[in-house]
Length: 473
Image (cartoon, rainbow, N blue to C red; front, side, top):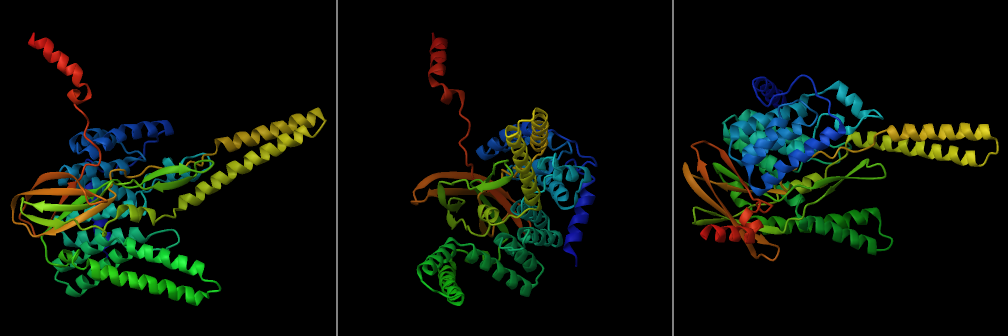
């Protein structure tokens, strides 16, 4: 069965009826207009991270109506805002619109301009990085799964793993553990026990492979190899393999109880959205390179209390967005931009060489000709655009923690205690969830990562006190 065809066909049918669907033509925006849009969206993002999801929706909605090159990005962020506010119907509409654009939409004019010397990468329809595409597939798959559409949910989880492993040099296999756990869940619901066991094992392998203790063991092995003189390649491999295998055994033993609840039947999955995903910034002489900078999260450990009674660990390590973002890369556009930067540098060097030659000749006509050629070369190079595109899905978290539960229909109270790196309690965040009678359901618990905006009293208490005193007179 071709799951990819099933899900994409359904997307296109539904999108034709959707308010978040695609328009046939892309509206061209200047770099200034794109930057102005980003300033508007930044306001929505601040609201999102303060927990003001309705305000974020109000700001983002108008920007998703027009078919611009940034529309898929804003659909992702609007869909996330709806999802955080528990409006799954509108969330699905927008996330599916973004999915369709990223997967199948191709606009020849914008693509051609983006790769030209005088175009900009932002002229191209936003497609997102592998980690963004994989997480989008995760969210859409969850929405399908909650509706009981296991086949299309399974297609999404498979697509997400394909996106996660789809790098330029094919150096990585997917290790997005939550996608693999949810694929296993689909097989469990379909009563395909062999496939269920296979993907549970793959998910646990991803958990172990991404664990910081394993990375530390690799670094320790590298240091040992460096300090050992005249070591053969075979011995290097043996040292590395031994250190890593020892670390993996320790991780599996130490964390077996930690993730054991994911291996048991459950009907509810609570997703805890923690921190912020890495920032993308431009670097390089011509801003042609992109660098991901991880956002430091002061909180480290999270515990959940259900209905003021039972306590659960928030399980982390199966959906570390920052890890996925910083270990993936290799875009075709990187090579294009490197070529643009090389062209700019080459024309600048050639122009400077012409100026130097003009200084070294006494013939005034030759001087004039050389200066003219130098100016033309500089002018041509200056008009070439090597700037990298730094649009990215900013409302994604640093990590998605999970808690598998078996809940009865009704209202349940969920409280999460947040602890710092010294395991000191920082704060408690509480919300109610309305549990429906379904075979599988999921709920999002967004932990605000920015302080709420201050009221007028908090901003200027003296002014307010004075007003009260005046009224009392």
